[in-house]
Image (tube, rainbow, N blue to C red; front, side, top):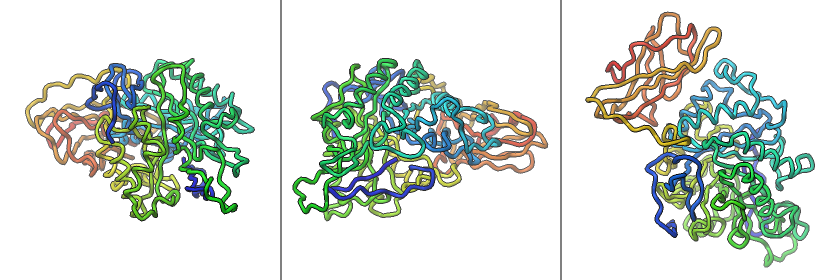
Length: 529
């Protein structure tokens, strides 16, 4: 995820990560068409400071990071939990996250790479699949829900992040060739919208002997802006429809100031790893295909590192000017869109809650606001925690409540085409039910029951009941509080989605023990479907 560099030449501060985990008013040249929700139609491109779909409608990506493919597991974390992988994506979408940012390391792409940490009882359909095959399934299912996917080259290897986009063991050629392979693999699939080229380029070495990533210094071996151009243009040569997401650096020089020389006059204004785009206006990334560039800063709070600005006398009033300086100006001056690729906190410090509230307000409301992907879904991010709690099913309601007003839920199938036309509601009290068996194995099965409120009024709180034959027992459920008494199963509305509006649907996922069986006598709020 993230490693900070302090202001004004202070040492690089390294946040501790859990073992195995790394964890305003827009100025437009022409009026933009605002999409009512979802992630638009077809491939996306840019127009000034906005992301737009194939019809020209403005799209706001309001997403979340689900990490793990960059670690030794080489696949999504939480696949070891009792919540199946589809259930986790269902929950993300139902909460309003319309985009999934997927960190990976080049290790996960190697021939013969294997995925680990998978609960074969809960996720039997993933057993024996390669990391890329699991990614294929996640992309396919997310796309069916109208979500978009951004691929993030998070690390060269599972061992850790790197200041530069290459290391002694992973060359620039490997970095670019792997990106070209992914672009070819998902060519023609508009669910996958682009490449976050390299996660958190940052400074190393003490100036003037800088060895880290600079911006605009002109050294091909260290200038991240030039490297982003080389990789971005190589990807666009294979897949010209992708967006190219470019993060910032930490210090534009690529090196840290000498705090021992007593001279602060030349100390550099440094920010978060990947978060400093202050030179992008002067030295923009130049791509061969127009309208494909999105700048993607990272932004964190005190649970990651206590930057000096958090203790300024005018905090939090000082924060908008800091965000303006590092990356916000790119949006405000209509230079390019902003997609905040990572931001998050445990919220353990009261200052962090204020920070998150102010940051979200800074991004703007509605479809014209800046895009973002929150860090993270995972509860096991050592210095931020997650939206999901330790059971990978329950939700951190404090964080979710702050983010909720800015989320634009996906519309089913939005990645590949227009949403289906809603049907005319039936009189109050009506419902329909559809069942899909997802998988089956010896002694058990996995299914999804979708219930639609076809009445003219919301059901609040909603509950769905169904029956199973004797001998079938519930193992786990998601998207509701699912319990069983005798042969009757009850799915009660969760606290975060108690009302089912007229015309709306809910999909209840479950695994069960026993012979595969279709739910019978389905009812919504006591009314038979």
